[in-house]
Image 1 (cartoon, one colour):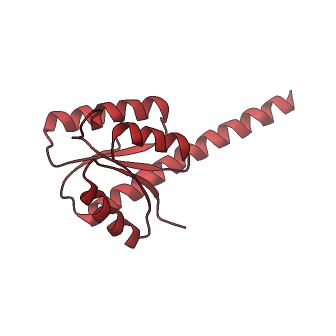
Image 2 (cartoon, helix red, strand yellow):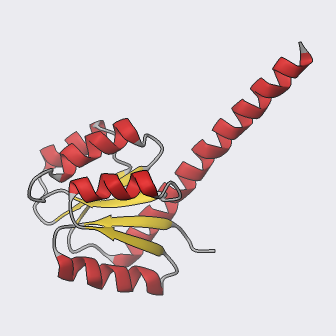
Length: 144
């Protein structure tokens, strides 16, 4: 089993290709998207995705707008914002909107791996709590 199932979202093809290779070497199951809309489409079709590594600066739907849509449509998905054009304000906005964390490009692979692992763990824990609550609710209904 891989460390995590990650959707890497960036409009720069060369960056996506290089990061995909580097993450796969570290036992990460990586899928790619090159725009905000493609990211949402992939999330809709692949519910097993745990972590989205999302570029902030993209043409069309930027990373902040994509984050808003992810948190509305896929609230359990954990998002790590990634950019080479970061400002403190953008980082704060992303965190306020529910991003798990924020990293600058180029990022240290060890740091990125730690963030991916922590984000995937958080998502799994949320899913376990939901399953436990559902099971408890079913058990209570049967007990009535």
